[in-house]
Length: 220
Image (cartoon, rainbow, N blue to C red; front, side):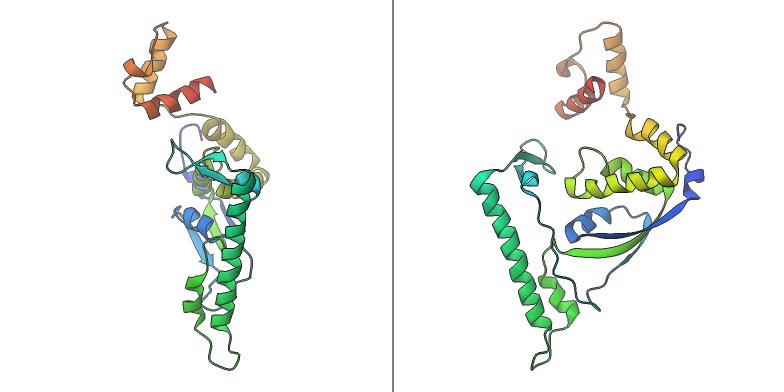
């Protein structure tokens, strides 16, 4: 793990049965290093089950991160958002059921009716992956900056991996999750700081974003 060898970890494989909202699945499938067999809505009818976030996870758009959340919404604004999510989900599924119904007439094909369903409906899949690629997935998705809805899955998988391969997982925590990778510029800045030089973002050679990330590493 320390020297970034991968072959030993590629020899271990695990297969997980995962139930997850479609919008989380679209993030997850970006990791194109696994075998996936997803529940097919062409053949089967999806359950009336939707992900509705808890009030504490309803937040405004971040002003500094286009992919992240900002302040948590509260009061009437949070209640309004929750009501919209619940109502839209229920209405979409009602229409889905009506379209596939064969009550007195031929229903719409399931492969067409499914397109009306929202991204918060649950799907399921079997996901088979080797340990090397699984640890890469966890390094990104169990990180505190990952979206909450995929991070909770990654956190649970971490527990499974820790039980399955405890020594490998301990090394992963030490050298990957608990470690940090620094650029050449970051190393140069750190050496200057160790020598007692006053370094700020303006004379560091880093962008504001790079400096913010660098300071997060050295300050913990």
